[in-house]
Length: 239
Image (tube, rainbow, N blue to C red):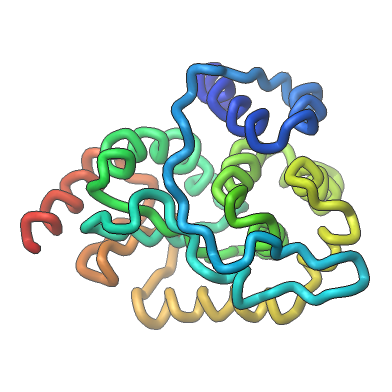
């Protein structure tokens, strides 16, 4: 179970982004909204704001779906690339406990920006990654927040895919779109290619792993915010 303060923060994110659909999730998880949460950080939107495939019709724009989503200011001097799996409990801990602190300390202050890249460790993480890639880029990080915050519930369900689809519904994705997205072989291959690049270029083996400035430094695991700050400060002074 999440701490009450964290549950309140997650509740606001879902309420603000997904509207009335949040109350379904609230009924299931007893989540509550907190109107004191900070505004969303700037995100770089890929070329298409509508990546969802229409049911049994258009194919997903995989190129647009796989473009990096940037959390923070584009001109931040340090880029942190996070490789994570949506089924990884350590990744969920980072998302719910550490990242909010990093936003205040490094991202909102313009010292660093964050890019999330998929490194799914099982079939359910693959499906969740594909689903998140299919929502509007403006909802991407909020979708990740919801998936991670509810990780134990949907992964522990009798039918994890059914529960995952319910989270997609909150983002406006109907059941046919969910099936189209999570079953798209081209999108799955693109996600796998990102994994292969992470393994060969950055020697990523575990999640979460954080790559700073294209390999200038590296952290493995949901480290304390101070360790991220130390790396960012070192790289900033080295410029």
